[in-house]
Amino acid sequence: MEENKEKKTVQFNIIKNDPTDGHKGFGTGVLNLENVTPVFVDVEEKTAFVDIGAMHAKSKVEKGIKFFKEKEVVPNGKPYWLVWVTIERNEEGPYYYGVAACELIVDRSIRRGYKSLPEHVNRMDKSMKGHVIVDHMDEPSKRVLAEFLKQQEGGLWERSSDKLKKDLGCLD
Figure (tube, rainbow, N blue to C red):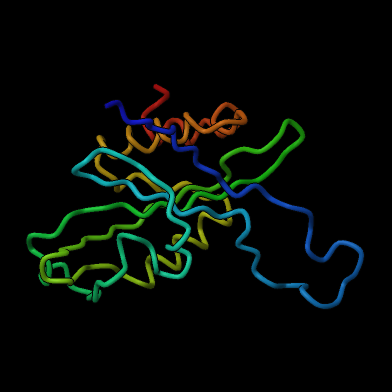
């Protein structure tokens, strides 16, 4: 018996209309996260996937795990990169504006993990401000992330900066 495997399509959050369009009152200065997407890179499996639950630290990877600030708590943990990907739009269309990675280590067997919450918050902020921070990632994970971003529909990769492509090892 043959299984029907559906191709999983990933939806990046594309910027919607300005929430303050038409008025200058309520909502002005509010942080808009509609254009930020959390992408996990599983270092061991060499896969990448979107989990919107990460916006509130409730992703599949994070659920049921008590996190600590010290890596020593999880010496046998599984490494992940949580990458905050921000989409902006220019005249040609949407593109990857900011991409910033944070380290995450999880040991499901002991329900413990490592993450630096300040780093996660700061990297999300940096991504939203158009920074590319991936230089601390291992090379195989950079390749996985680059391939994942390239596969998304809509020409996002093609319109993205040369800096992003270079930092992910796609330009010489």
